[in-house]
Each structure stands twice: as structure tokens, then as C-alpha cells.
Length: 339
Image 1 (cartoon, rainbow, N blue to C red):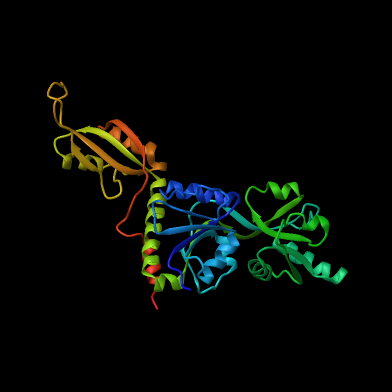
Image 2: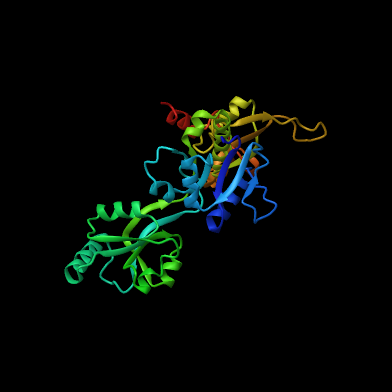
């Protein structure tokens, strides 16, 4: 039986689940889940969407099979399944839950600090003990490619579903390839990442079932809504809205003064509006309100530049969304769906 609903799969537990919920709420897509034990919820902003909760690795599988239409998971999960034609990457950098997939060895391996020295260790194990280097990982494809790239041989991958860090301590693996956030868990288990052992820098991404986007118009429309909210929020995160009062003869004259300063151009230019004076005020006319969008890291320079051209009463406000005419990632999605 064909599905008629549109589904978004989100991480069910852990840091990625919490970060995903916070991110969507900040985008204006707050999840309504009255019972935390339920594996289904909805987003009031997107009434046509059903939210379900799964493990990150299962999300990629569900998207590939088409049992869900969209999913938020880790970049590591996506690249582990590289080449899956059923999965389309809609957004490759949602900006939260960063972590690294790294090669980590026991601290007692003091001479092994690089991939080159790990290759030497593997060769030594084969010569002296006639056995391959044993590597515990949940990412066999990424790990295998990386070991081959650095000429580490021979090796044997140990696929582990649970905790990896204990593998070297209890003896069923020599080292691990695992996701690392702060490194605390590695240190607690007497493991150390190699200096050049970064396999992949990961963070949260948005993926979709490609055939569903091609055949179900409702899914395509919802993909646009998701990208609109996400892109507008991410763009706004980097910016402030700045207001100032400025005296001048005309808006054009004020604009000319502002354009002499590098930090007063805004997105497409400042908005300048006349201030209607209070008849009882002694200040009189000739005042204008100026507002512009500026990058957060340019705020101090912007305020200095406004003062330099006569700006006063500067007010700074956060920005919730900055919408473009059409999100670039939506255009990229449409192009990727073309035969």
C-alpha cells in the first residue's frame, strides 16, 4: 500500500536528538511531542508533515528505502553510504552537532602518532605475529578507504554495534575509528587520536528520498518549505539589524555619506526613512531613521562608522529570518532531480 503522508525522521536520543530539536525550534519549526515515549510527533508550522524518531544510522536506511521522505542525521552516516542513488543531500551543513571521525590508538603506543607510523605498526604485527591490525569501527566503508589511502596493511575491521572505546582494553581490537566530540571519552579509556587521523569532519545534515521528490508534488513543496525556514534562519544567525538616527537634507545625501564607509552597505543598501518630528519638539525636522543588516563580527566597526557620518541613538536587534527570493539549495535540489 502506497503512503499518502509525508515523513521526516529525526534522531531519537542523545546529543544529536537534543541539538536537532533545539535547531528546529530556532528555525520556527518546533516539534510538538506530548508524550516523549511516542515515536511520532508533528510540527504545527508544517501541518502536512509527520515526524518520527529513529537512530541516526536507521534514518539513512529509511530514507533510502522510501519509508520516510526526509531525515536529519550526521554527515558521517551519509558518507558511509556514499553512492546510494536513492538518497539526495539537501543541506550539507546545518551548523550543529559537530564531531570528527578519527583514528585513535592506545596511549601506550607512544611511537605511533601518525598514519605513516600506524602503517609501520601494521607491517610489524604481520611480520612478528602473523596477524593483521584489528580495527574496531561502526564505519567500515569510510575506515577501509582511509586505511588504504594511507597504505595501512594488512588490517581486519571489527564491526561493533555498541561502545568502541573498550575494544583495545579487552583485547578484541588494537585500535578504533570512532566519532570524537570533546575527546574526553577517549582519554578516560586511555586512547589517543592520531595527529593526522581525521577521516571526516561531521555535523548534522538534511537528506531526502530522491524518487519521492521526483514523483510526489507534495513532497517537493514541503522540501522547499523546510529549506526556506532553515536557510533563512542560518543566514539570520550571522547578522544583526541595526537602527540609527541621522540628520541630513535628503535620504540620498545620507546614503552618499554612508557609502563612504565600508561597513554601512547592508545587504543591498541601507533603508532610510524620514522621522516625523513632534510639533512640540525643539529638535525640528531633517532627521532620518536608518536601518541595515550587518554581520555580527562587523558590529563594532559598523557602530564606529555610523558615528563617523553622524549616526546617533544606535539600536541593535537580533534577526530571526533573512529570506532570499529562492534558496540556493532549493535550486540545487531541482537541478539534481533533472534526468
